Length: 526
Ligand code: ADP
Image 1 (tube, helix red, strand yellow):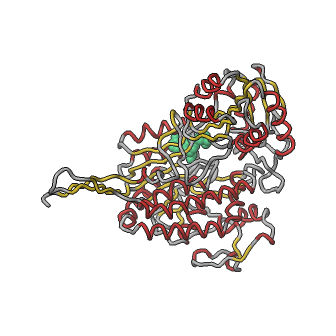
Image 2 (cartoon, helix red, strand yellow):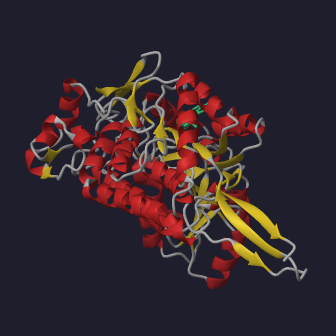
Image 3 (cartoon, protein in one colour):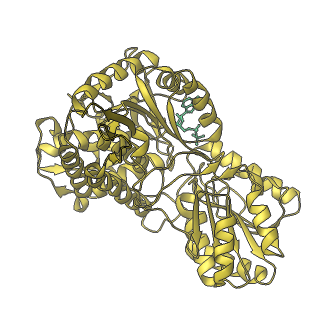
C-alpha cells in the first residue's frame, strides 16, 4: 500500500504549515496511517504521495525511474514521482479494463454515493489540499482553496448527475415493434490534464466518466502530479473500487509515449485532454487510428471588450478577475482588452490604479499574495519576449513589464497601452500577467478583431445597451461568453470552445454525454 514521501520532502512542505493550522482528522482506513496521522492529525504531508496509483495500489515505474517536482515559488524540490512510460501505461489500461467490467454493472445510485463521499472528504481536507496545490503550482492559497472548492463541486455535480442519465422510448411506426435508446458507459477513458488547475481538471473529467460507469487512466501534468495523487487517495478512502481511477505519472520526456499509448490503445474508447492546441492536435491525429471519441479543451485568446456604454468600474473589476487570476495562467483568461475610444483613457487609467493598489506578487503561501509565480522559467521567458515585442512595435508600458525581484519565476503585473493587432500579445495566448489594451471605434470593428483568432474558447464584453448585448453575444465566435462578468465558470454550465479551442463540453448536464454511447434497441415480434 501507499508509501509516503521521504522525510526530507515532507519537511520542505511542512515548513509552511503552522501547528495551529493542523486539525484532528478521523482516520478511516488503515493505509492512511502516517507519523502525523497516527497522532490523529492530518497535515499536507499526509497527502503527499511519491508513487503512481494503479489498480488501487501505490506503484513505482517498471523501470524504477523517478523525476523531481519543484516548487515554482522557491525553486526547491518538493519530492519525486515515478517516471512512467508506455509499458506502465499499458498495464494501467489493462487494470482499468478489468475494473470496467465490474464498474459498469454497478448502479448509478451506488456510483453517486461513492462520489458523494469523495466530495465530503475533499471538503473536509480543503486547506491541506489547497496548500499542497499552492506548493506545486504556485498559485496563491486563496486561489488554491477556490480551486479545491471547484474540484469538489465537480465531484458533487457528477454524484448527482449519475442518476439522471436516461434513455428514450421512441414511438414505433410498426404496431408489433418497440423502439428504445439505451445509454451505456463507453468504456475505459484516457485523460491528460494540465498544471494550471491540477485538481479541478481531474475531477471535471474523471468524475463525469466514473459517474457514467467508465473507468479512467489519467496522466497529470508533469509539474503537478501531487494534487492528482492526493485526489486518488481520497477517492480510495471514499470507497472507489480498485482500478476505476488510475493515475500514471511521467516526466515531460515520457509524456508523448504515455499519450500515444492512450490514444492508440484499442481498449481506450475515449480521450479527454486539456492543454495546448499543439498537443491537442497531435492527440487528435493519434486517436484517429482507433476512431476514438475525443474531447479537447485547448488554448484560448479571449477578447475582453469594453464598449462606450460600459460601467467602467465593473469592467476594471472584471479585468482584474479575468486577466490576473492565477497570474494570467488560465485558458479562459482575458487575453486582449479591446476598449472603445470614448472610454479608452478612463479604462486604462483606472485599471493601472487598481493593479497598483491590489496586485501583490509573492509566494502563494504568504497571506498578502495575489500573484504567484509563473509555472517555470520557460513561461517567464515567453511572457518577457511577448512584452518586448509589443514595446518594440510601439506599445506603451503603463506599469510592470519586467521580471519581479521575488524570484526566478515571478513577473510583474503588466499593462500595455496602444496595442495593435499585429503585436504578438494580441495574437498569442500570453499565459501570464500582462494586459494589452487595443483601441477600437465601432462595434463591428471590435467583433471583427475578436473573431480574427483561430481560437474560440472564452470571451467577455461590458455594455449597458441591451440590443448590443444580444447582438455581440450572438456574433462572437466563442464557446463561453461573459457579459458584464469576468468570472463565469460553474459546474452547472457547459465548458468548452469552438474553432481550434476544442471539441466537446465538460460539466453541466451535457458533461456525461461524451462518456456514454447510445444504443438503439428495436424489439420486434410483439
Ligand atoms: P503546457 O505547455 O501548458 O504544459 P501542454 O499541452 O504541453 O501544455 O501540456 C498539457 C498536458 O499534455 C501535460 O500533462 C503534458 O505532460 C501533456 N503533454 C505534453 N506533450 C504531450 C504529447 N506529445 N503527448 C501527450 N501528452 C503530452
